[in-house]
Image 1 (cartoon, helix red, strand yellow):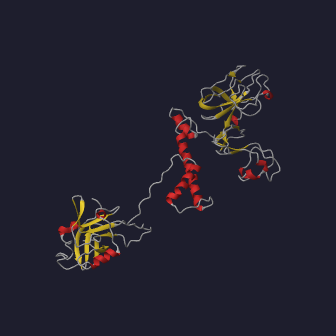
Image 2: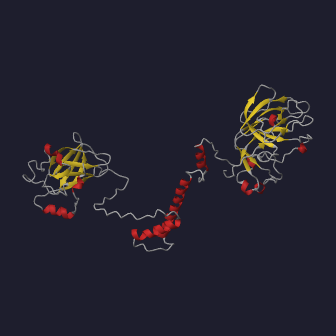
Image 3: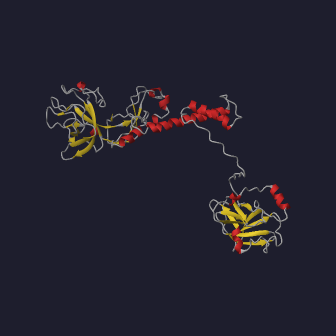
Length: 465
């Protein structure tokens, strides 16, 4: 059903009101009030007319233009609403010079309209009562007139202005200069009185701010398109998602890492996020000597890294997981099975390791205190030819895998066997256990290729790779 307002313009102005008051027959609705009452009719609309209701025959036998007759309830229409719609009249009675209409329910906060003397037939609204003015036979209803509201109502425009035509937008504008030129060209179309073009003008400043924002949005628009292809993607997450499409798992990257060897004096645990500092060569502020290997955390507050000269060149690392330490793991040896020329070739993944109890004389061998997931650092501790520690090659770092003479390597334990005691059979996963040829027993039974339990710390100040 179309709206009753489509019957024509609603011109309820003072001039039209005065013309109705001077007319001998025409009447109309002055205003409509809503009242809550006790049962049986709790919802009532009270209609006040511009003039008193006339006597018959101008008002029909009921004194209200026949609107109180049950057969004419179809001439009373209530339209509108947002949440509550479909309100219908139930009964109409005349009380003095007012018409009281009982309705089915109470409406919401939106505007409703009451129409008297109109009937919807054959797809259109037909005027049935000629004694009611067509403009003043329709009146607005506010069901919440007495209810407090915490928001401002928008003023309705009876005759709103025509919408301005949409300006032509250059879709090729993609940067700050082109957006600024486009906005300036639109000023005469939208506001011909704006003639100022000085860059210091507040309006031009706001215009340039919009041009800058458009330039940023245009950049992100192009960046999103570039991320859709592997050869043009610039973000690591985009490349990782492309690699996942071909079942390739790509790492997210991480900060700088390094392995640290801890010489333990007793069993214990190094907590996660324990700070590890590079070598401090000068006394700390307020102290007279260079600090030792273990420094109380209270002696180095965070603010001292910016103000203490002794810490100006110090790099701070943090351990990435808790590490259980034991004196047995200070030095872990490779079992040579009595072979005087035992060698772990490059690419070895299995090794038999043991530790020796501290103390002089004959020492008892035992299995290392290791578990699955621990890291080991393999290092040459004595020269393979002479067996002297001074001849060991300690200059190369295990990360220099491109060098054939690298003398350090690392591996992660995947399996620990317990069949042979007091040594353990360890299998490594990931990279090769050795990236170099490890001589485990040179002349004289020396075992220069020892392994040590290591904890990988993290360099938190380094940018993400």
